[in-house]
Length: 422
Image 1 (cartoon, helix red, strand yellow):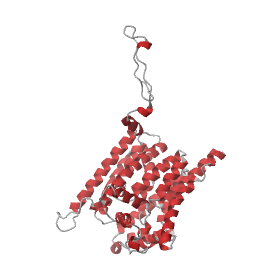
Image 2 (cartoon, rainbow, N blue to C red):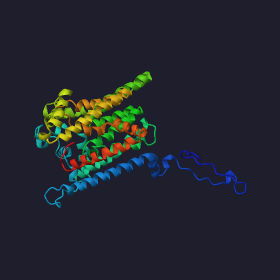
Image 3 (cartoon, helix red, strand yellow):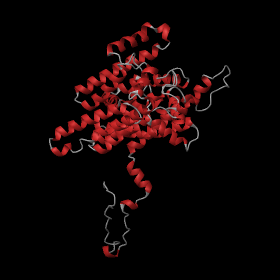
Image 4 (cartoon, helix red, strand yellow):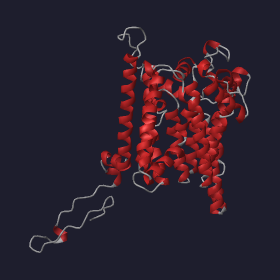
C-alpha cells in the first residue's frame, strides 16, 4: 500500500516491451499546494471524523426543530389546535427575549435608567451575543431566525472543537464521536439550538482550550477574551488557561517558557470594558452583578445556605413553589459537578478542575441554585470523561442514552412551551 503525501506520485510500473525512455515520457505537472482545488483543501481540513461529527450535529438539530414544530400544535395558544404559535415562536423564550431586547434597543433605551423593572434587568447579560445578534439581523430580518442562525453556526464550530479535544485526551478513534454524541443528547441540549449564549460561548471556549493544549498561548487567550464578551464563565476559562500556562512553564523549567506570561491577562479586558460602560451610565462598577441579584436572587450566600434553600424548594415546597422538579434537577447537577471536580483533582487535571470548580462556586453561592443543569453544557471534561468510560464499559453508552434522551425531550418540550426557564 502506498502512503502518499501531497505532491508525490507513486512510481509507474515498468515493462520492457512498452516503456519508453524516461526523458521521452510526458510527465503531468503536479500542482503546488496553493493551486490545489478548493474542494481538496476543504476536504483535507475536515477529516472523516469531523464530517461524521457534523452529520450527527445536523441530525440532532433536525430532531429539535421537529420537536419545536410539534410543540406548536400539541400545546396551542388557545383552545383550538389551529391557533398554533408562529413557526419560530417556540425558540423565543425566557433569556432569548432579554438578548433580543438588548440587541434591538440597547441597554438603556431612550435614556432610561439602569433598572427597567423586575423582569428586565438587562445589564446582567454580557454584550457579546447581543452585538453579534444585531449584526446578523442586518442580513436576517427576523430576530429569532438571526439568533437561531448564530447558534447553528456556533454549535457546529463547538462540536468540531470538542471532538478534537476529546481525541487529544483519549487515543481511541471513536472518542471524539462518542463525546459529541453524549454532549448533543445531554438533558439541556435544547439551549444549544435556541437563541442562548451557550453555543456561541463554546464556539470560542473550546477552540481556546484546544489552542492552550497545543501551547498556542496567544490564540488561546485571544479566543478566551472573545468568550468573556459572551458570558462571565469566560473568566473561569481564563483561570484554567492561566493554570495550564503555569504548569506547562514549570514543567519546561526554562526561562523561555515564561515569555508569554502576559497573555493570560488579556481575557480580563472585555469584562473590565463592560463594567466601565455600565459605570458610565449607572455609577456602579458592579451593575451587572447587582442586576443578577435583583432578577435572579444571586446575592451571596454561603454554600450550605444555598444548599438548604434549594433543598427546601425541591422537597419541602413541592406544593407551593410549582418548580420542585427544576430544583431537584439543580441538586442533581450540583452533585455531578462536585463529583467531576473531585475526579479531575484525583487524576491531576488541575486546570480543568479549576474551571469547573469556579463555575460551581459562582452558581452554588446564591440564595438557591439556578441554571446549574444548563451550565453542564459548558463542562467539556464531563462529556469526554463519560465517553472514555463508555468505551471501556459498552453498557454505559446504552444506559446513558436510555436515560438522557427522554430527559432531553422533556426539557426541550418544557422550554418550547414556556414552562421552564432552565
